[in-house]
Length: 232
Image (tube, rainbow, N blue to C red; front, side, top):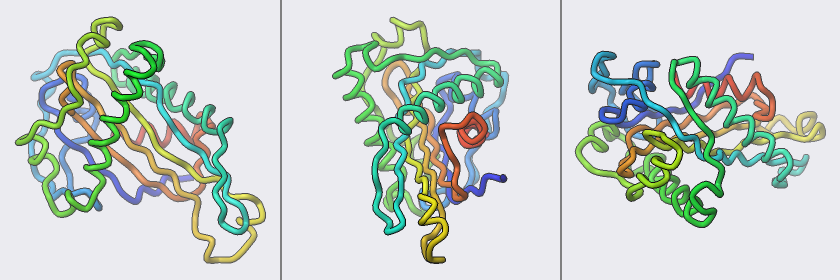
């Protein structure tokens, strides 16, 4: 099954070597849907960057069981499996690109502190997804302004990493009754976003993707397909 991407966006990646890896993997400035764009912009030259190491914050992928009547039921067990799979997929994909990574559990820097950090990262991600950036060159916007979550050197030093990557999203799984029901039931959607911050807390890379077609993010194949597509 091919992955039909409905929307994607990249943002600034010029300082942190890890962000450069994503650009060299193909996430160069391009026109984006519903998130600003206009294309153009800078390509990263491989010789400009040195290898780096990612700290992957525990991903949060929320899975919903959608009933025949369209009622969404959050499934904690499914979500836990999809979240763990997202962490493995990200590590494998980054490893394939030649970059090291390590998983940082939520308790690594204190559960409350990591929760606040993730909230700040999602705050910026939500802004990049908003109509405010529609029609704008996101790359230029983030280059000219500083989007920051505050210093994260202590956490980076503790794990020997150059930056922190956070992946989150949601996915729908239709019940058999809904799949067999009305034609207007639509298609199961999967949304994923990834944001990378530097040691000083500056946002250095961002991307989100929306796919149709009933991906099951608990499986290795579908998780690798979606996560892998985000780093292309």
